[in-house]
Amino acid sequence: MKKEFSITELQDVATQVRRDIVRMVHGCQSGHPGGSLGCTDFLVALYFRVMKHNPSFNMEGANEDLFFLSNGHISPLLYSVLARSGYFDIAELSTFRKINSRLQGHPTTHEGLPGIRISSGSLGQGLSVAIGAAITKKRKGDSNLVFSLHGDGELQEGQIWEAALFAPAKKIDNLIVTVDVNGQQIDGSVEDVLSMGDLKAKWLAFGWDVVEMNGNLMAEVLEGLELARSKTFKGKPVVILMKSDMGHGVSFMTGSHKWHGVAPNDEQLGIALSELPSTLADY
Image (cartoon, rainbow, N blue to C red; front, side, top):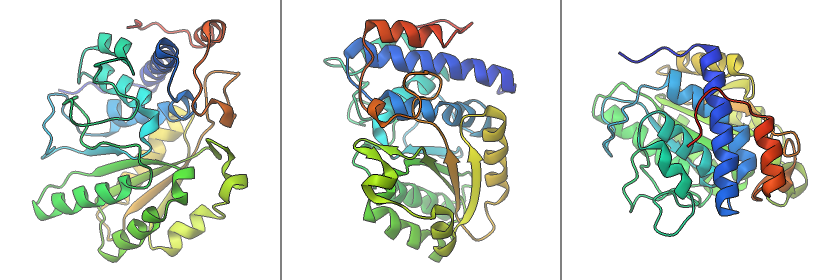
């Protein structure tokens, strides 16, 4: 029987995952800590509490919920959560972005890493994949859900809006899409690079059911995900607009686009780890 994690336990896991993220990126001096840290509470809640999934892993994912990471550059987060929820040995996190590692900078499928169903990182494609998986589940009579995660900067890709138009038109209502609204992307703020305007109004106009939540408060993440689940199978796809802070949990990274894809040095790693005390074990 799957353990029911309390909010306190989920918060403890999230803190440890954040430690994993900064250590992984520091260890290879490469990677994307900012968005990974900002989305940590969400993905921990999803894998440790909300989603029905099987760490034994089969590619089809029949009779379980599926998750697709579209903004694949936040791979340190996904790898940590997969390892700590039993998909592969936690010790493998130490190989992140190193030669011959299965833990590449953007997730890939050719190495057969458990938990990875698509190669991602070419932004804009994940929603189309998630819709395809949701359609497949419906046609096979599988009543489980499909989840996907995207960055708000990723919404500047045209393919996102083609898929966003398709899903409501075809009543794909076994789908929950989450957009990480942290307002930052690699070159600056989303507002300065290409303003997305009123995201809630846009998704509503496209025919989606919209949920809004704070992505950096575990209790609100759980409430938002449960509300989203309650809206499924009612004729519309669901999108969660999740407000978060890039770099959340590490003071000098929080809210800055400069930490989108920069690794901390030794001194910065020490500061980050001191701000993330954990009762769990490092890899």
